Length: 94
Image (tube, rainbow, N blue to C red):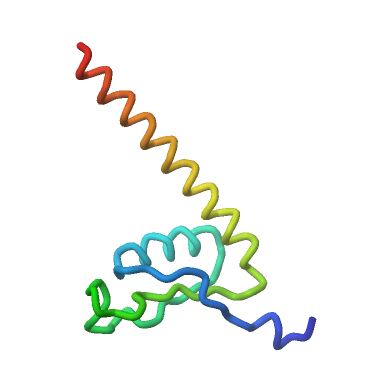
C-alpha cells in the first residue's frame, strides 16, 4: 500500500439530518477515527427532495475500526431499548 492509499477517504455513512451525523461523528472522533462531514450546509438536508443528506467521510484504512464501533453502538442501543421496554412494562403492571 502506498502512502497515497492511506490518505484515501470514503463515504462511510449518509444521514438525513445534521444532528444524526454529528452524533456519529463525535463517537468516531472520540475513538480516534478522523472524519469529516460534507453537504451539511445544503438547504435540502432533512427534506424529502434531497438526493442524500449529510455524508460522513473517514479514511479507508479506518473502515474496519469504524464498522466495529458502529456494531457496538447499535448493540448498546438495542439493549437500552429492551431495558426501557421492560421498565415501562413493570410500571404498567404495578
